[in-house]
Length: 84
Image 1 (cartoon, helix red, strand yellow):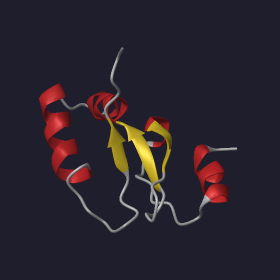
Image 2 (cartoon, rainbow, N blue to C red):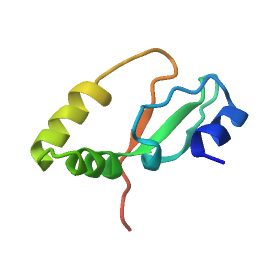
Image 3 (cartoon, rainbow, N blue to C red):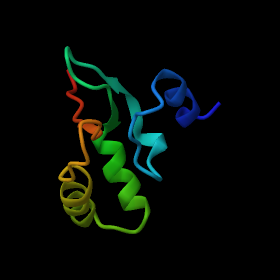
C-alpha cells in the first residue's frame, strides 16, 4: 500500500504535494484545526536538489513555491528536525 493510500484511509481530504511522497513524515493535528500532512524539510530540499537544482535554488524554490504557498486550511507543513 502506498503512503497516499494509507493517508486516504485516515483522511481522504488531506492535501499532498505531487512528487514528494518520500518526504512525508506524518500528519499534524491540533485542537480545533484541520489535520495536515507533514513533510521533512531537509528531505524536500534534497529531493529538489536531486532534480538538478543547487542547494540555494532548492531552498529558494521551496520557500517561495511550497512553504510560501497557502492553499487553504489543509496546506501541508514542513518540519525542521532538531538534533539532540
